[in-house]
Image (cartoon, rainbow, N blue to C red; front, side, top):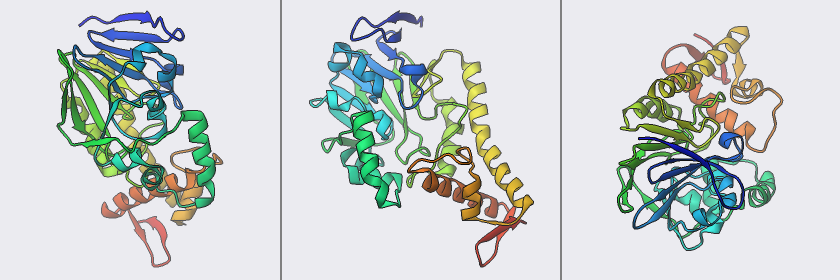
Length: 310
């Protein structure tokens, strides 16, 4: 299948690449957060979008004609264009559905523990991501299919990043929207209340089995059309799991530490980096790695919650 590069003749010069009935619009800096990459599908019966990042607001009529939105997962940056589509049907994996339907559901999915930061978070999401919940959103399950006319979407539930994170395959084009298995140098993110290190490991292992010819990430990397390059970057992305575990072991070899002390050293973000969710995300991430290390017999913990190498 040949790809066609061109500029979108709409609100602004948004770069795009077409694969048959599938169009990928690139967000700022190749979709680097806070933006993302937008996938649109021109079925002969239905026009569909996969997620709606910030760039959706700059595409124009081609995006605004969307009749169906299938969300790969729910985070603020993937909902930034939903406000433009009040009449479109919105489908979300059932495990992420409450996060799409209400602010309270999203906060629960995030696992926010400091109520003092919640008003500022909501204000930021509304101003930066045009955040508006979709109480009309409907749930789907693994294996769900949508027939759009001469093309369709198939869902492969691949949790870890969120409980409902799903890879969406457009057939017969063979374009897989792999969402926030985004292959960035930052590595996998599994710091929400509904995230899972164990599930993320499994999802990364399963991803190459999807019968795709093209892989589209939500962020930064963009589009892969060469399987070897895709697999190499996927391996580097997955290596972050063990790199983080090794960092924790190195810190414990320096001296025994509590979970709170390990959180201050960070494994996701640089030391000193601050945002409303950092402490919660680091705590959940490190806790999951410590649980693995305990199960593997590589660390031990005493009654005071102090961890040390086994």
